[in-house]
Length: 78
View 1: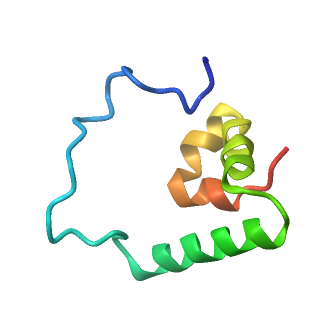
View 2: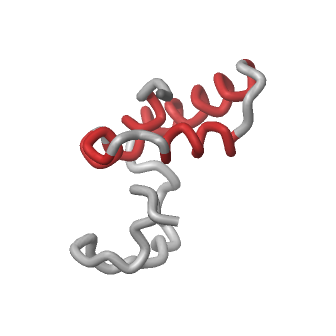
């Protein structure tokens, strides 16, 4: 696979680290709400999380990188 989401092994992103024991799941409360709304909208639309991920992976490079993690959830699929 050679999509934009397949960035394993690329340099410049810093080290990966496991979360700290007391680290919250989401850094900000709105991020948890965005996750819940995305999951709900995905189910209501009759799709699944795999379809959501596939749509995100089809974004062009600029949109994928510039929108950020939660921005990708909000970008309509092509």
